[in-house]
Length: 206
Image (cartoon, rainbow, N blue to C red; front, side, top):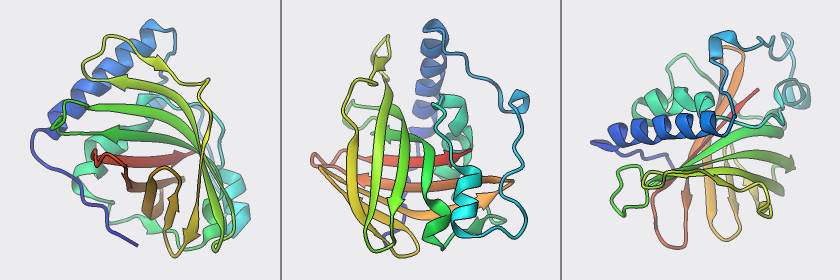
């Protein structure tokens, strides 16, 4: 399972700019992002829960917004997984629904900096899993509007689990790090695309 190699430099300023743009566009579209401190709290998985019981407790089908990924764009993307995180090694504990984000060309080297918000679902077994990406919204740095992607066909990736996830379709998704922290589950990784555009993916739930 490959490591996650994140960029440095001016990428942080560019990511901040695109997140601000995303928030403004979502507000204009009437999609209101609820600040994390005002959201309904969740108890997470019961103490001692394992495998599918953990997955069931965290699984979500709620649509994402850019606020859901500040933990990633402002911290983990640059500094790595927090030291007090507990890594998840059990495939059954990561199955079910997630909120997701893909960040493209974060340093704008190809003038294609942007992001897509989506929902993801992981099903199957460690030896034969499916990762389905249900597209929701795209925002590009040089555009003045968001692109509704809800009518796009879902993309299904097939792969396996070896302490992390690797799955392929028209590109390959690597999610080597799944972890739990403060009653939430997270995953971070990268995508190898056919055009070699740098792309990074993160998941969170609930």
